[in-house]
Image (cartoon, rainbow, N blue to C red; front, side, top):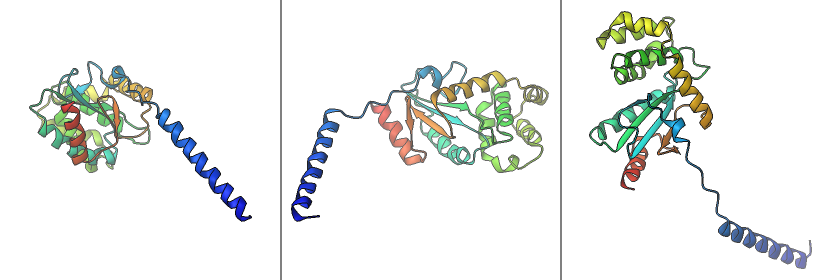
Length: 213
């Protein structure tokens, strides 16, 4: 390549780069739409606060997912931080993945406890003791032991789990997640926007910023 061609080639690159920058400046990236609120939270969704709270953090989670298990202590700490803040609401939606053998059973156990007013207690026990039941051939026995510790009516609990009484709710959660494009767990939404942070500091920073808006 001659010296003149090199110069012309360089000038062409600069011109093209400038044109691209001008185009981007005049045509900023399209705004990412918020997720459908009706798909994020249902009236019967498991939530810690009000559906109409100023700030809502939604998790689509799987009880057998190790990443959801790792996230749960972070969520517990955040819930302790905002327990007296009526402007904050955390929502857990069941999204048992097909590759996790006992994820749906665990969701049934959590919802069965919820029918007796102890959803969050069972939710945390299932996550906090994830390693004790994911590799066990009789996970229902372990869930039943949790129910005994929580003081639940064991017969009602086992009947609810074994008869899949929460099937419709779990299916609705799955359908909503699929409609939103959820394909992995945990998937978080903060006020309708998909949230990338899963560590305590950054999640709290984002929640605090949303509360101040």
